[in-house]
Image (cartoon, rainbow, N blue to C red; front, side, top):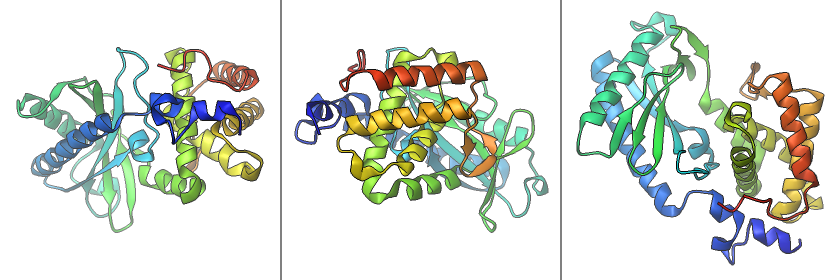
Length: 296
């Protein structure tokens, strides 16, 4: 492991390495935790009254995976995903509410939450196709997707704006993530995901940028295939991961969801997928150093 490895991750000088610069600070993490806990409590109670259903909530996305990165500019925000689950037995169609009902319940509940001056919520966006978004002071937002949950079958379906139920199970993909990364190596894999997420934010225009979950799955798959005894510092692991991902995308741009192999996580068209592979090749050819512009 050379000097470059310490520029990426150095437990003896944490504040002067890339890992420290791209991940949330402890204070930012704690502030977000306090806010999403408060919102989750409000939603479980309020949505239960609105719907007449039992409610549960579950944190998901990059915050849950431990791969959240800092906003790359003042115009961007930290992102948190908090799923709410309307519980009834049977299929989604067996309940009293359709997908639009659930999405409307969530949107109205968030609007009421913002009106409460005792919290730091600052506004609600117009409903999105698969979630509602509430913004908070302190440069972050929380996306709230709504699901049907049959807890007896441990089965989930996402409510969409097309008034359809979508096969979507964030719990299943998180379970996959824990297995494929393994307890001993998970911290390094998280760092590798964060490095590539920040690189993509800084180097790729938003419309051509791979999604957070796509990067997470690509890194985890590549990491799982490595002969890890052949590599030492994060610099060496990152170079090999980048090369492996670029090669994979050149061979086949489709990236199946590990929890639902019928779903392709790569939303980029062929031209953008090819461009992504080329940019990854460029990154892999750079000297093992901190790429220009990464220290934000």
